[in-house]
Image 1 (tube, rainbow, N blue to C red):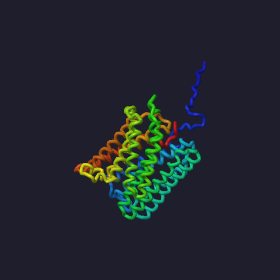
Image 2: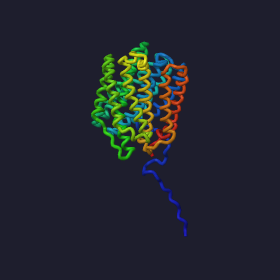
Image 3: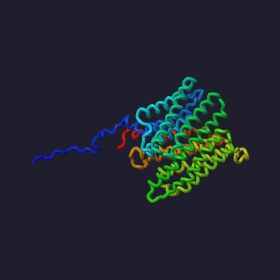
Image 4: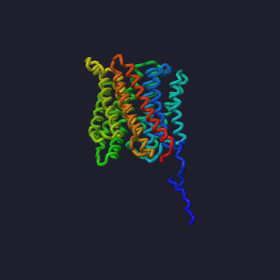
Length: 407
């Protein structure tokens, strides 16, 4: 009796390559893959440069102007564009940017980062042109798929991305003239524009994520409050452009209150045991609080008494919105959406949860460093170290997944 020969069995679908190694085609398949990697890597590198090697930052975009610019437009807005390029494919069924065009967009982004860092006017102008093209291209392709896919409720998103690009151009022009007041005004405009985008998108996806993760959880979508939030946020941007600070403060305060109302209606107690959810709730709530602080700053409330003097510092609401809001929301979003779009289980390992806590620690230390004390420098360095390790952990865990095809 002859022994039966073992027949190899393939677990792959017909026509699917057996190899699951890195693939350029997979890497350029959707916007989140290269832009999440680029944005998080730049978050790590730019903060390390700003805190530990500021002598490398050269005019015309140097010092705190470089730091503020690279945090908002180089990191936060980059992640937002990566998310929107990916989410719009889900909303419309049309992928707005992939392959060589996506690679070209990433090349524009990289030229901007290198140009600003290189210093000197020629490099600055090349970087500014490349970055302007990046935001213009992103807005155009988003508008094209929204119109083609008849996603009417998302028609405003491409114009908000374009608004980010316009605010960036105004900021760069102010940096050339050395006008610090105008620089901060345009930074505030970009910050608020980014806040409106973050609130608009997160308001839609956070309840959806929560209801998928927790069986039986029912969360209202709060469409009317969302529409009011968007109108108030856009009004704040328009009033800011018109130089109407007090009416802008009222619009910001109303937007922040709507955001906190929404969080309260989303049953936050139900997600306390789910880090992949509470990190998103925390970031969203912090943006709402930050908008209230921004309103207080614009209204001049901090100068009213010594007890509220902290509100007079722009750095307070900037870091509450930018770090406690955007960055906390981002570390949660780049984890949750990457796992989902990569076809991985929506489960966190220890490195992912550690990155959440490290970002929160970085935020707490940075806010503590805003209070004048002899420990300011030590707190800044500790905050930067926690931040760098957090994003290093994210990259260590996710880069191998981002450069490979879905399983």
